[in-house]
Length: 427
Image (cartoon, helix red, strand yellow):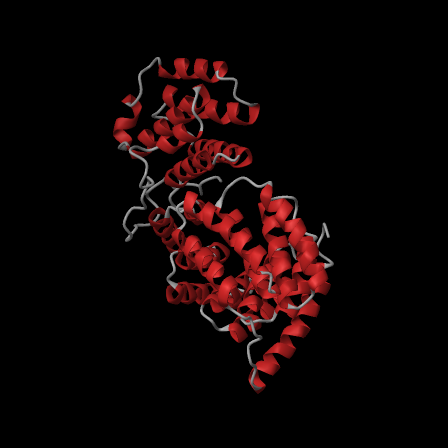
């Protein structure tokens, strides 16, 4: 991302925010996660390159010409040649190595693009610490660019580094205001997801609604769908099931038939319908979503939730079919939190089907994984399902006139959702 003509890093806008955190809580020094994630010669080279960019960025302009040893550039170029890096990584590493040769005369835009290229390499290879480290390096080199700040915030949030994520996202909002409304709205929506993950639902709703207002005023229709989608999830978690349904309907309208985010919206809506007992509404939607789930732990969870929907809808044949598929899929997945959640969904489905034996077996599997991974909340939920399998008779929730109206509208929405999912590529 080239810098505007005549603009140098750190000179464009004064910041009234605290400097964004540069390290995760587990890092004793910058780049430590890169070394842990990618040990060996290439990992060491990545760390050195990241460290050099950081040192140059933090140095005063007058100190930069004497920052590196005269022989450092030649030694680094030899390291790059010897490490066997792929061409897509080899080129940006050589650009960063040039920083050692001429630290007083640097092409900012070229150096920023080299850091971004190294980050893209990390993304494609699944090295999230490499991706985050070099994206952050690029954002610090070009502190006037809101999209780079947003990228650091989003990556930090996805890695569970919430302090770093919040300050970078707020920096992105400040930079984007009045200049890049798309990133401005996107940063607010991402901040809402962060607060949701932290369990602060009022704050999550407030910033998500701020993002929604921006999408409406600036006519960002695609992001408007995302905002309504996020509000659907938040309303469901807050117990406002009718509100969640309204937001899902609005998101579907903004996304339009065939939108790639529709499977995620349909899945989230199905989970909301579980909470209010609309299993027969959720069942056809989950079945339509399965066509868009490749073989993965996500598909295993999708099969488990479809089995649960079938049980709640009283469809024993479909329950048995999806139970068997989910059981086989979960058994082959590596141990991780999502697998525990899948077994828990199967256990809840078995409770709905009145199959206490299978409910207890699935809940026990969920509890074992939760205990091994120290997931206290999941273990508590597994124990609760075990107890309900022994003692609880599941009855459909009563519905008043308002409930009947919402239930009827849920049926109409389910039909629209299934029809729209059929138009998503890859179905």
